[in-house]
Amino acid sequence: MNVVDFTSALYLDLRHPSRCLAPWQRLTTGVPAALAEAPAVAALSAGLARLLGRPAATPARSSLHALVDVVGALGDGATVWCDSGAYPIAGWAARAAGHVPRRFAHHDPTDLARQLADLARSAPGRPAALNQPAAPDQPAALNQPPDPDRPAASNQPLAAGLARPGAPDQPLADDLAWPWGAGLADPAQSLAVGLRRQPAAGGGRPLVLCDGYCPGCGRVAPIDEYLRVVRQAGGLVIVDDTQAVGVLGRPGGAGTPAWLGISGPGLVTVASLAKGLGVPMAVVGGDPHVIARIRARGPARQHGSAPSAADLAATAYALKCNAAEGDRRRERLTTSVRRLRSTLAARGIRLTGGLFPVQSTPAGSPAAAAALTSALLRRGVRAVAHRPQCRPGTAAVSLLITAAHTTADIDRAATALAAELPAVRNGHSGLLAGVRS
Image (cartoon, rainbow, N blue to C red; front, side):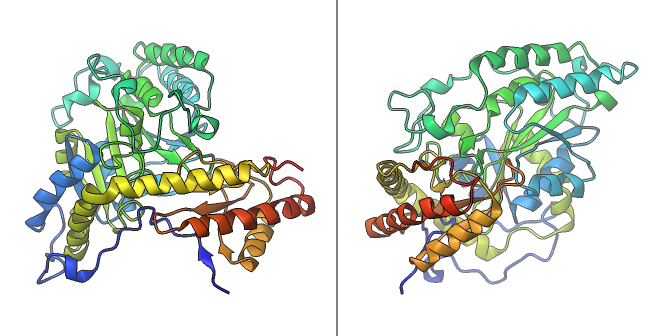
């Protein structure tokens, strides 16, 4: 029996045949990336900056290497904070860079602000570093307040077929709506403003690590609220946008910040290109002085090689493909996701994920998730059982949709899910709360 695979995160289904890539004579320079890189890196960095919609960018071997470089280069004397639902790589990178990250509640800027204020109050004898100018070797812009002239999110374009929460047709409102009430924005901001009167513990500023899009709960992170909190303390928000780059945001799948209309100082974007562009390489985007510091002081760059010539060539080709046909592929993704969701909704089944190409059952027991994946496989549909970082102790089953999936593939998956979800629900209580009898 032919099996339709819904386990690949190559969302745009970009291919990189060797005949289409620029040739190379050697894969690596043989020296650390901070010392020397291939001539192609300068032009490629400019292309990656355009992809992300950031002023500057630099390539990295992987998102783990990139995050180690970001935290290692920018984290001197800082306190590192991780969203509790973030992918484990964020915490691994912080520890590799010499930090023990503190955690705050998933997608909760109010909890972050409260913990920052509590930490500041716990060290009354510390110097009030929050109102001091940046150290000579630190970018001064990191301590600047938000830019009041920054365009509002409502004026920013979105990826083809996708809309922000609150847009007229609200295609994402069911699953990508903000996870906190609108009334909580003011408490978070007031707590953040209070930080200006408190000394930073250890004289350090906060570095906040989060994922741009959380596949576990199908929501985007409240990046703008995080920025409001940390900018008051001269800090940074570091977004691992691996899931969203290539999928969300204009132009060309620029990622979650672009999709939300967020830019300005204090924001650093890290993303693996393995999902959206199909290249096992990463990128770091941000303000030019921040990227320059990372390039010079990143620990992984100081002690490891730059991305290989093959990866650089594949990325350059993928950027061209994305510019030429990326919007068409993203539209196809949106069409496939809408078809799957509407077909199942008509049968009383509601998936999480909005219009993002990761469509998941409601979280429940690991045993039920394993049973469902086995049942789907017997029907010729291979799905992913996983344990969401944001929902400890639970498991879900996801279908990862790509531009390669046909209408017949989507209909086959919908038929299999409609047949097996109720049976698994009845046999394993606690899973599939979104399925009606």
